[in-house]
Image (cartoon, rainbow, N blue to C red):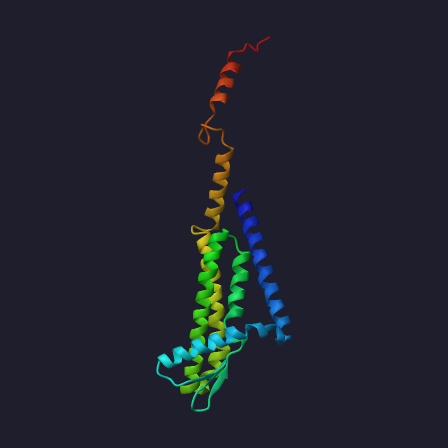
Length: 215
């Protein structure tokens, strides 16, 4: 019974998670066909560019910022647009966490911590890409299109995995078994322990034993 219940609950959560993430990916692909949808993200683009410029200057590298455009005196420059803000990965993280099991308050804390982690990783990504573009431009394309794309997905997957470990610290089987034990205790008559008879049952046994049921 425990194994069947485990498969049912985990399968239901897995299906909900897969559907939510799939729906987000389909919606994102559709949104890319209509760039006007991302226009409200403009302030986030400027804020991200300002943060990157501040960190780059802090490590001693020159950078000029105009809006969401970052330019090096050598002539290199790149524009921070919606895909560079970390919002896409953050929303993907939130969609997955909302589809996974857990209490609302704990989820809220997990979402805040996860989004902050994703945004920090995204800031490190942009700073790294800028520095590489200045000092080793031949490695920029591979670092941008392969390495950091994979790392950002790993961060999101790591947050999902960490949430599952938080929700099921002793494993899914242990969680389901504990839930069934609690349910069994609620069904046990008051004043008794699991496996013991209640006082009422003992009294009925005594009365039945005293009756003469012979012919």
